[in-house]
Length: 157
Length: 293
Ligand code: SF4
Image 1 (cartoon, chains in turn brown, orange):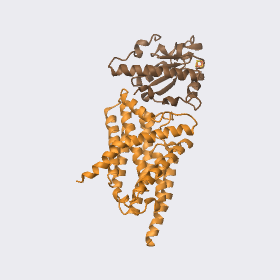
Image 2: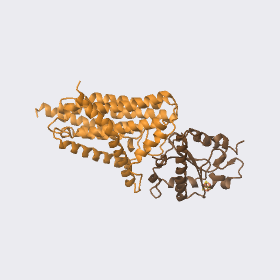
Image 3: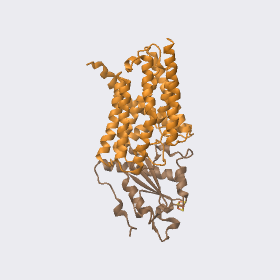
Image 4: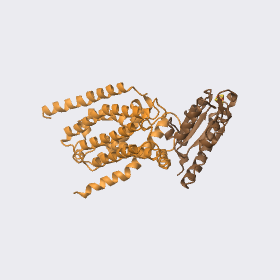
């Protein structure tokens, strides 16, 4: 049995303009219905397998992003949803921005779009599930888990 | 010792997960169809449980694991007494003890959500506990015994003389199954005001153990619904199972229709229902007895 059959999702708004958040929530509504894939939107990092971050990371939220990531049990994957989460987007040059989510934690799937379309997001989640399976297999073979957030913090001061 | 009682116990322990997964899958598929969406595959609860056992366990303290284990073991234990035809009072007491373990597990973690969840679970226990006791008394009044083996050996089903108790019991089932108007301490649905409440700090395979306990709990609770219909006649077991399924379906509909209430409302509504339904039922039973019917 594959772990990807039951991915539970944690959504965090790092500094999004709420455009992407609404689309993330839209994908859980009956029209797009991500529960078809067994996906549940849990608010609890300790139950989550997939972390979806919307918006770029700024000075206030980078600690939160790191903490949420470290509270999630292995195996886990991170999806950057929306162009802001991918590289900072239009907020990139703001004085308080670190940039995309990958400046603080390792990101597995980048989903572009402003705002990210639910279809694109579901596609990203399905890609993330394949990575989740790989990580589970790696964990089973006692391989060390690939990256931890400390060595990905290229944007940290 | 009579070794024959080990047979129903073994059947209960082995086959309950299958029945429980069926109920859970049915719950999720029917819920999503009620919301006009496709919903997860029928076997989703199985996938979820297997996944949980494959995850890394983040344990906040060792006590929590032991307490969650206590919950599951005592839930299974109370089910064993029930299916072995034991004393229904003992069944309910062991069952309360199991819930107590869960409250202790949640309050042993220092997350604010988790401790809030455990407090609310206490309020829930306060709300439903009187009715569980009255259910046992109701069986005693019509069958003259607390033993499940005697209750199932009646000529007429217990529901004929205890319809009020039956409805009261169905009402507290909403709380016990964590269905929507009364899912205060933790919920099967996404996001609530205190995230996951009771299960906030329980993760990975410990959560898996907890979910397994809840599956046993669910089956045992539905078996008590069936107990109201069971008589000497073997056909009555079929009636009991059908009744349990119908009640379960009604629970799903209630879950999808009602918004969550405040804890004080839950307490008063549940006690009001307990008093009016079970109380009037007992009054009528006593009067009938005095009239010699
Ligand atoms: S990508 Fe667009 S919609 Fe999404 S958070 Fe950035 S600005 Fe808002």
